Length: 489
Image 1: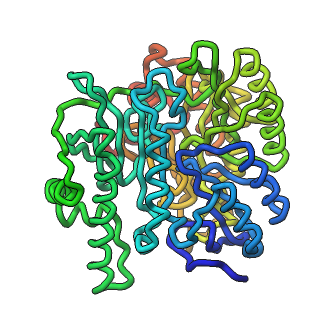
Image 2 (image 1 turned 90 degrees about the vertical axis):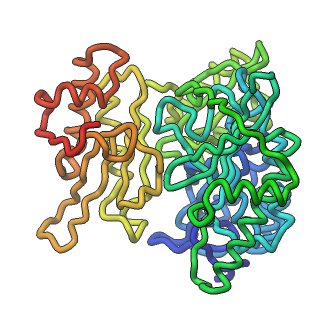
Image 3 (image 1 turned 180 degrees about the horizontal axis):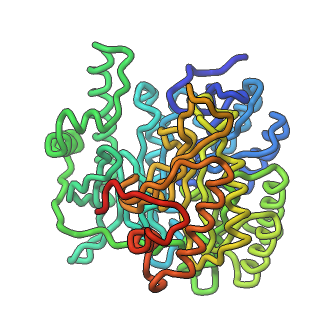
């Protein structure tokens, strides 16, 4: 078994991350934009590796599980040749670049972020000295359109956070700027600094170099230290960091009180208009973000038939096909639905980590539960809007960092006299677990409980504007199981 670089904390491509079912590989896709030629290479790679599926991650990357061998030089070269891997293996783990999945086609966007993503990607690959930076170091560029990353969405489960978040805004003087936010502990801190498009790259270059220098200083005294950007932020504070960025970049960062505009929820699903009046994009969601090899071949066939040269992966483990006519969009939607992809938002959005038996940290299975739960909801509940359900096999919450409306967390039953898995149920839509705590249930009870809660919500809520959490707070006495409220805020 021979890998080209030393394993990092996060899965990568040039090193294998060990799991219970083999190795895990992650192919980073800057801004989630994939071309047809790249999809064909990935399909061939799955065959070579004897893998039957891949998964879209919550960072709009691709993962392949259950690898039983290292990639050979020819396979690495093939991925590099089509831009799916860094030319320098030691910088591949830094290509954590999340962009608006509708960049360039969003009818409401202020700025197309794709050229900036490409420039940052090239910059990171050209600086091998940055290889010691955390594999979690990440950038998010949001063009200010209907589909937004960061925390613009009024639906909190759509939030996707990065260490450095840059969102296009239009100031009162009609100047376009990027509003800078930096990540604290599971939240974005608005610095109120606005950066012109011309100053964006010098600012990012300076910030990265400052972070790199700080990392070197810490690692020189403690080689085992894990230095995240938030460590620098906690040590220095926002003002000192930004002052250093201005000095190093020789760029002025202007203060603004401009607020971020809200994005439009659920615009990553279904047939949606592009900025071109006669074109549309189609958003689809594979179950748990997983695409089988057969589904991938169908996807490639659809793109080929309609002359589409690209697709976009989304941070919600879905995909978007752009540049379709109205007829093509309807035909493609029917084809995707026939292979199990969901295309409408009025269905459960279920997210789950790997769970047992493939993850050693897992306390229970998650995928089997997700499948049975989805079947039960689809058969018995007529949802009129999306409900986000997050199933996690441990408290790391790898599959979704943003709060879910319903969280199902595997209970640690080690040392207990039980042969069945058990799960904690939580409801919340602002901060994790800040609303209502449900009972601890076994596998079958979870399915019955969640299904009945959603049935009652659909039938008994006051209006279509009443959220699931508002309904639960109002009608706890009528729920199928007793609930208690540790904190009602």
